[in-house]
Length: 85
Image (tube, rainbow, N blue to C red; front, top):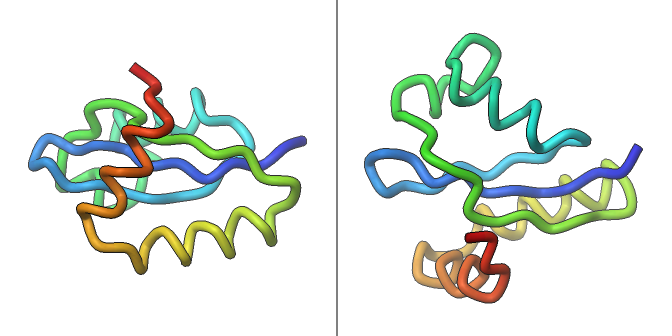
C-alpha cells in the first residue's frame, strides 16, 4: 500500500488537500459527497489537480501539512509542475 498526497480543484476555484492510498476511490468519494470531506461536500470537486507519491502515511501527512501552509499561488506552481491534465 503506497500513500500519496493530492489536491482537488473545486468548483469555486479553491484547492482541497488530502492523503490517501487510492486516489481514484478517494476522488470518487469526494465527488459523490457521501464519504468525502465536509469541505468538498460544500463545493463541487472537479478534478485531481496534483498528486505526489509518498513512502508512508507519516510522510504523506507531513507533506500534506506543508502544502496546506503554502499560499494559493505556490500551490498553483506545484500543480503546473505536476501537470496531470
